[in-house]
Length: 471
Image (cartoon, rainbow, N blue to C red; front, side):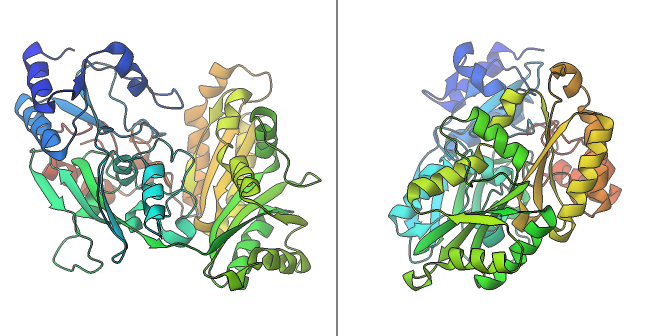
């Protein structure tokens, strides 16, 4: 299916000078996601520079019944930002919208365009003497609009919450082309429905997020980073509660890493070094944030006390910024390092923290039974129950045949997640990958309510169709 030349010209005019591209070479990188699982097609990529241009584009799309697929930094992992393959959808990139509209250090807020890159927002907050705590491996390319639209999590959720907790206000273009200005920095506003929360996690299916008011925090006086070896996942979970008690709530990151995943990083990531002298089955990477220099040594004290309680078998506190960065590189590269090992089946799930050990044990056994020789690599955010249960193919296996087992393996893993009262999508969203799967795990009432919201706001079904929920 192709779009008419008249429609394309009207959309280009709405986007304005420099606001569009028909160059196949420029568009190509935007049509495939990082895992290369989803590939799309489009005749036109729109690149508006401001909210007014987005509104003009959406009005033309509504008038011409043209489907739009919003995209930020193209770092999503479930295909929510990729158009379908029939070429009938137009890609709407927000990456030119990079203006920091306001920073209010006294109110601890920052107002930004949707195309601002997360790392730039972090730097802007730092320059103002504040902290924007959202942090994830793709922060050098992920944009605020995409992070809002997927309700991104990352490594700081334990202390600061996910994007839903970090957004005070939103500006969005509705499917009609109207602009809803919800850019309020108020902490308290009890005047009816909290409309901004409709757009957080909606993946562009209810409108296009064009701006956001972000919540800032006081910068810690210092952050101490430690790696501890633990004998089991059970010990890791116990260590979390132990550390939180010992550090008086100052544990701001707590990540689980298996030895297998660490070995992948050591083998494939240049400069990576084993953090401890011996190899252990499981590791925890922990940040302790200090509110004053008087608390210096808190991470060391946590490790010493944990060793005395037999919760850890070894550990080390980073002694420099370079060592801190090296420790975090081990964790951040865990997904990247799986690529050279062949096919990988990935599951972004969450369970109650106390259920993490049982889930990992049960899911590992189920996968190894389904695919003998498969190599599970469960890692992630113990502090909020989010485990990335990835599975690398058996050594020497056929990659295509292994990847073809995705649905069978996902069903087994997700059924175990459900048995523990968990979620089949913790932070990556639904996108294309799980749009059918959620109907198995969410109630019919929940699904129909989501469909009702979609129909009410987007009756023509033009905003990122086929993502999150089928109508």
